[in-house]
Amino acid sequence: MIMRHIGFLLIICAMLTFAAGCTAPPPGLSEQQEIEASPTPTATVVPAATPTATIHSDLVTIVTPQPVPGETPDLRTPAQETIRAPGINRTIIYSQTNEFRFNEITLIVTVPRAPLIIDLDMTPEGFTRVKEGTSRYGERRDYRYQIYHISGNVWFECTVEDAETGTIIVRDGFGRTFSHDSRREIIIRRPGTYNVTFSGNLVTVDILMSIPEELVN
Image (cartoon, rainbow, N blue to C red; front, side, top):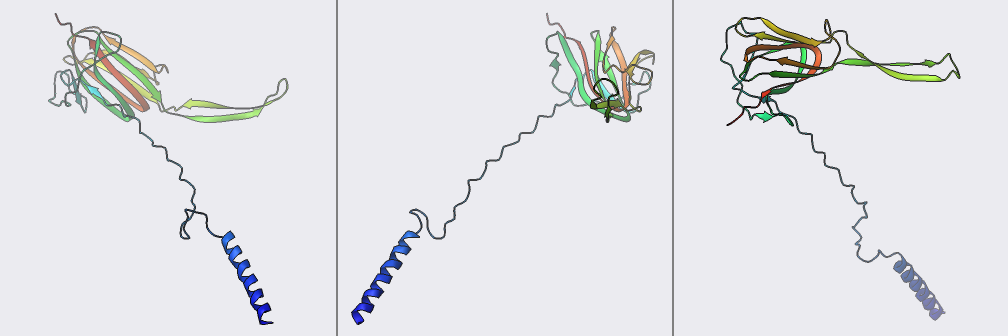
């Protein structure tokens, strides 16, 4: 009877040992280790380079407010490297993007070699309106499209004056009494010193001024 109980206990022990072997952790993992998903690599975002202004301080003086004709204030920006306009024999003396909100920028520009070319690329602010409905013609299909409207308060003006006499040489711009063409080219064909004033509202303007490249013999 005792031997029968001993044999029965041995069978139970063998079964428990076999079950423990089936649930043992796989090789290489301890009881404290946990299996985690591999982290997803994060993409590195490189910010876009911000373009810097080009100002030829020997030829361009920034003043505010607009100077009196014949008066040259002693206010100059630090000299920066002169950049040649690509593809043509011209030198950029001023290049900057300006946002206008009922403000103005006045420059005194010395033009040793004509012509002075002022290139303006204007981006007016506006708003988008969605129009949708059903056509009353043909198959009467539904339609939906966006209409971009330029704000009625958008305007821009460039005025070039003779710095000695105050005579206005040219005035051009965008909106108001001017057209809505977003690109302008103003050409000053005589050397001299000029007051160039940019003013406007709700518009961003890329301004680039250049003169012929100096010839070196």
